[in-house]
Length: 316
Image 1 (tube, helix red, strand yellow):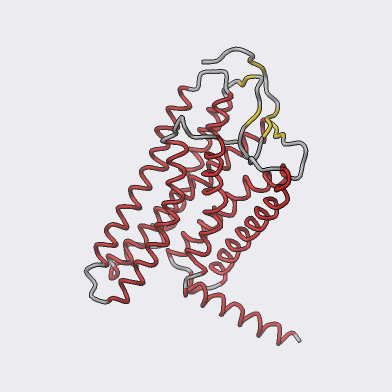
Image 2 (image 1 turned 30 degrees about the horizontal axis):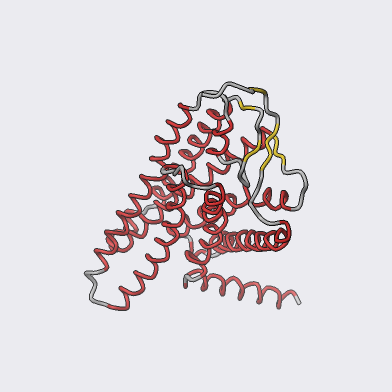
């Protein structure tokens, strides 16, 4: 426990990504395009699901919440990163830093639970197709979504309150592009054993348990698919499962590596690269993998476009 140089910190300094000055504009444009694409892609999915009655099913209820979570998840970190890349003042106030940490944990944890709900939905649809409507009732689906929100709100609030009780040393430089919980703990001067214990316990609940449930669901799905004689059905199912599992592996793999199995050999650059993967890349890929390649979404887009075309032609 470090007690020297203890003081009241009013702000932190975010070092940001280790980018050379002559490449700053290039990376700014890259992250801006990725962020805009993430926002527009997820907004499109939310609007389509809301407007098209054909998409008012359990799968798309979870998907609309996942898209909202991805949109907010990216908005917690990327706008501040873009601002700091164009500013000479990379500071963030103590209150804003805790707020960023809270919302970051909220939407990261929410995505984890929603991925479990989506995996369970696919498991029931493929393994118990005749009982799908009975099992995935509107009440159960809404309960799963509500439970996800309640649990993530409680967990992120608990971590934030535990962080707020800590005192910090004179060194207020965070070697990251956002207020990462592990980076903040390294700056604390007071005892962080409770914080570390809760990260380990709740991390198991939020990361390990959902990951195992998803893996178990898809293991059962694969087992069920292999019993189907139709090669076309098998290829289609494996294509869908493979895409989903690739994003699940990317999301959980980087988080597990960063927070639950940290290595003393991990450099700051490596940790930030892993953080970029799940804070920027995963929310960007989700709309394409889950929806924009989906025939239901394409059909909904065509129907909405046809309605708007007719409406505009009648107006003129």
